[in-house]
Length: 163
Figure 1 (cartoon, rainbow, N blue to C red):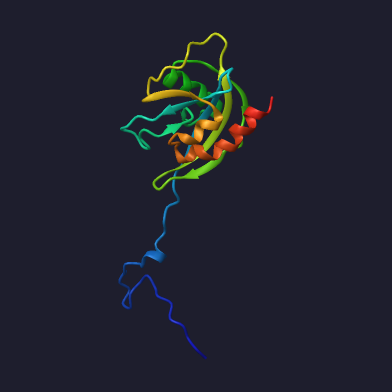
Figure 2 (figure 1 turned 30 degrees about the vertical axis):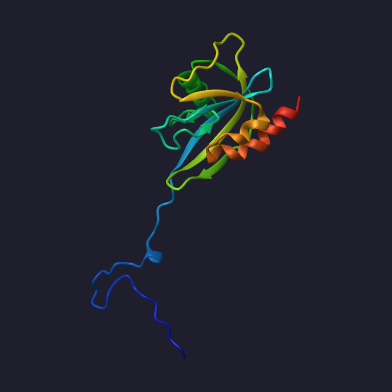
């Protein structure tokens, strides 16, 4: 009968050894909940916001939004973030399915919503972004979009084609 040697984390005399990498436990990445808005205007364009140069994914474009605080709903977070970042109010007209996106150092759970500007609101202003742009859905791919926002492009196309 053959016997197989299975390495033990404890040495021959009870001394602890350093475990090889495949035995070490790796903590699962923290998943940060994020809400984003696909804000559409009457011309069928969607609002893109360019991230500040000094932040993660600097100068890439994104659908505006932000982190969901503990105890806050994604809807409440989105309304708060849009008010803080763009200085305007929105009306949520629909929700898209949430999904998880993994970056190298962080994972986010994206909660996307289809929105429009509220009737009596001011135009969006880039309070925390480098720039804002109203873009036709067909032209969004020409922007350097953050990777977590790319999965929303098919949904954006279907929202625009549906009345």
